[in-house]
Length: 119
Image (cartoon, rainbow, N blue to C red; front, top):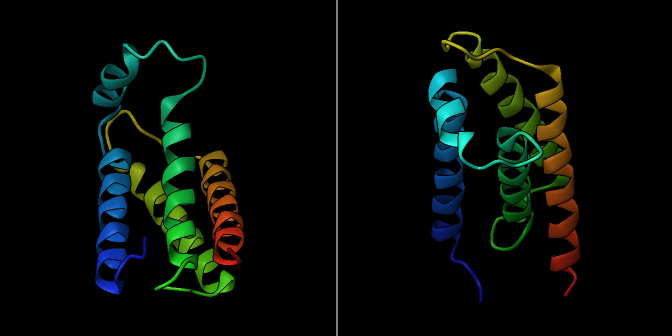
């Protein structure tokens, strides 16, 4: 199955909206949303990783085929902006660890995109 260029951009936009919604959710809302999961890890860290990996993989695959450097730069800017915006959200703070998690997700996404693109 191949995505059209328009569908790929739409999917990227949906992932971006999900990321922005999640990162701008007040801390009390976030804590309540994940309280019932009983997971041994922070769900927000996993969500950041998965969303950045998904966006990077999608950007690397046809029909977008963005360069690795362009994806890395976009991921870094997005990670820094979302972390900076969290400073203004009640009950949230910014973290360099979150930026690293975002970039690790983007790196894995690019790698998966390259491997899938060779098939």
